[in-house]
Image (cartoon, rainbow, N blue to C red; front, side, top):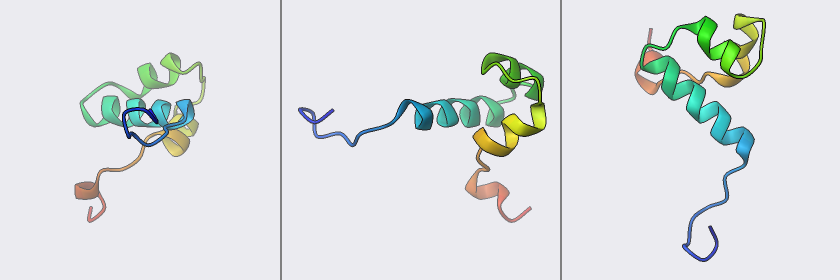
Length: 58
């Protein structure tokens, strides 16, 4: 990343980005939770799925 002038991204950040992308593109919540090894869908959404800017007004 340094050699290419890119900012460092932690794996934890990438995990949240992936889950947010999948959630915003129609992947069901229960599949998101299973993919990361959670049994509680609400916890997965609370900690990993970030709302889109366009959703903030709703």
